[in-house]
Length: 477
Image (cartoon, rainbow, N blue to C red; front, side, top):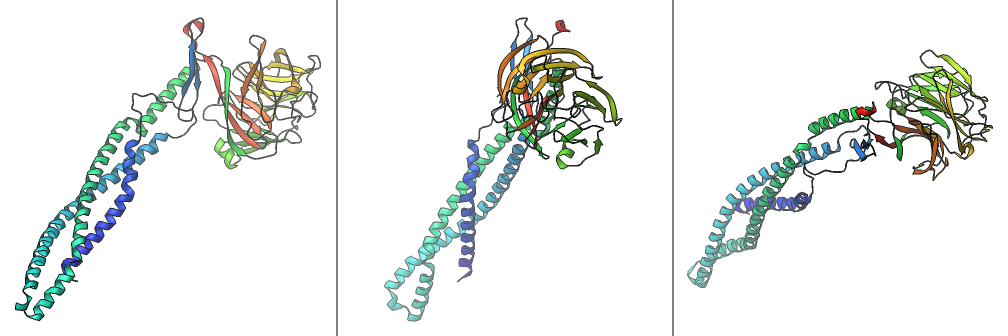
């Protein structure tokens, strides 16, 4: 085949590959122009995972602002990935546009060559017909050579027609790429205000302002429990894990106490990350075995119920020794008044924004729950007798001086009863939560994290809580 035909074949092959690639790629790219993005003037719903949010707001009869604030989980901004992907896509489209421009220039140059060749071929065909009519005047040899050359060129006529169609398609692709590039540029400009660095600084600023606001909040009422988040799966079906609500922000130590009896070993981890990976920083061998799973770490010391007794022990982690021990008068122990799941859970020690508490039952109160506020030397400062049977409670926890009691430790459990030590009144509630692993043997509130720590059938989990707050005014201080 002649050199012009080889050149034309290469061009057509290139055109075929480009056409096939563009037909597969462009539809998905052009589809981006249907993407809806909110403008900076539009308020979007932000989930607790993305940032702080006000759950609800109102005013009380005295005109004070009432609101609920939900703290965020610590994670990266989800918009960052989308913005980065958009920038990368825009760069690809721009590169593709440049390639199409180069291809278009080459196509136009070759197209002029093809048009000239087409004209020559049509003229040659007409001349050949004229010669064929008068072939008697030509030598047989010359006529045969000319006929063979014409037969060789004839198949190229429909190919040239297809080439003209492909050239139009390239022009059309070029226009679509130009339009797509404009759309993507507009989208990038539209979300430019949400670039990660700027958005991250705005989130940090908002978090600081909201933390300042949180300091002005009075104690809140439990409104909702969400989760759980599974932190780790370890140990037996029963146990306890906790952090210190009075620890500094840089101190995130975790303590782990497996089983509800016949154990004295407390494992310490420097952080949640170390806890998840199993990197212990220290172990403590307590002088006494503990009973139940309802222990609490408060201000650097562990408070637990001594096995087969109603004695409460205060053990200092820093000093490695017992600082105080005291009998909780009349408190039932050793499965006399446990929670519904048993496990020597007669005495439940807990802490909230107000301080230390002990929840238990006595014969004098007919086996119903008694709440006692303790100081850090284990002295009972004040007690409240409720009418809720301890054996009918699945678990309980304190938030802002109010005891919240669940009606079961199994599937379907919910917060069913609450008792306020501030007003000495109770109410029946209906706050469900997801008992993911079907058996809860420990449920305690941490005021620093504003979360519920739970041991759920060998899984260490966290529940988020939504509290209804009243913002303090200057008149309240």
